[in-house]
Image (cartoon, rainbow over all chains, first blue to last red; front, top):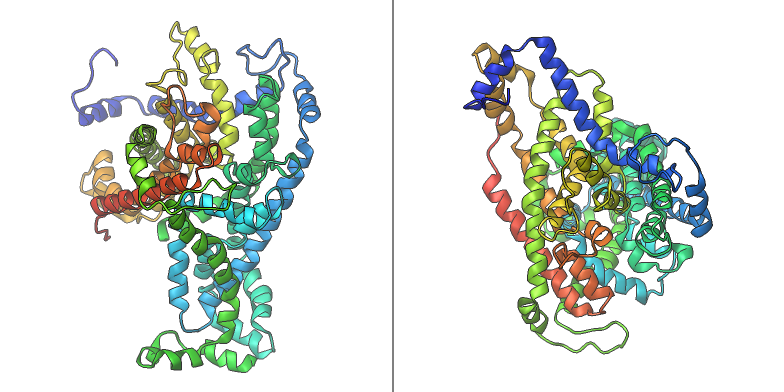
Length: 291
Length: 312
């Protein structure tokens, strides 16, 4: 096959189609598996290195001959990684809750209530989605300093309490709920907040999950913002602490320990993804193509 | 209260509202609407509008954040930027990253999306593998790739088995940015793949059936049906990966700290250094402003040259 290169793509296609179907399928799946392995290799490397002892660390074997947990022990004695795990879960859990509540309240108003200036506000929200984060980085940092919020949970939570993406998703979604359902609740004496949380929320669980996981993931994986506002180790997030551990002198070049801490930081997001897989597709599809 | 509100919401949207003056429309508005959007408006004022204004203000002043005085310097920050070799270097590096990253991203994402759009054995498993890097933190992933790319790292060990290398993935100044672009593609391609996949699934199957009846080859079907109908997704992918590329920070921060020989210094990394290592807030704000304008201009141009009318 490599001896004579085909003249054109059509020529190539003609030749490939001349091969037996079985063989073509086999080749196709072999290539696809190779591609998938390329994507998985860094994760496999991370896991295997985390379980290797110092003698094995530079060997190429994927499965450690003498698996050990000593790298994890080293991590837990060298950095307060449990505290960081709690910080990340607490801070971004609270932020996600806040995004769900506030963004859905705004989304409900924009989708379901009539008031002068509604479209203008919606356009402003769309516009804010286009402002690049780097422009706001420095002034936001200065704002946090002026509030006296350096080294605090507020510094991480408050600037992300409402999300334009969330408002957009909820507005689109809430528009599709039949008016009769809302009217019926109103006749029964429900307030707007009651309608939102008792009628609209239960009907919008997929979009709530979608906005929730994207908010949580965005926070959990962020390094830049926490590293700017929080230097104190007791307020550091997991991603921040592990990254600083990996590039700083603390790990002392212990590849095994760094990979072990990386694994701890990455696993929660992988679990969330595996559990909520289809909502990721939904979120990307509706925020991307339709928007 | 609630019945009045009900009467308001029940009214069909649009209608005769345009013929009234703003005051009449304001009086007929549902006050709950303002109450519900108030939290966002406060948030917007404090955490978006004010910082955006302050960013512009800062770009025309000098400030080291420690002392209170912020002298007005006019365009001095921008003039200095224009003569700053490191700024141009960072702009060039970011350009190198974009030129490698965007085409690679599109080709790989599109290829994988077309493959995943077919009937496959274990399709879910393949989809998970391609998407996994996207859900994990870029900072952490950079720690892993730092070791894969190291001179004595896994990639060079594998190359050595085949009597090749070693390659200075991150130590060769001519290669380091390309290495980072390859890693960033690996990291993000799952996201763009999903955008293409969602768009592919929206193309009516009958278009392909008709084309097949008329004797179109697989390549022709892709070239004349799939590709044109993917235009909106294509533009989205180009624009999002352009914005992502201009935002390049954490990968060089973790893997190279901008080196070797400033070859991986990105614009945002330069901004970060100016602001948080040298405390030049005004100068850093000027970099941020130039960056924002640059992103805006580039994406406008891209949209203009790539957008096609799409109709089934």
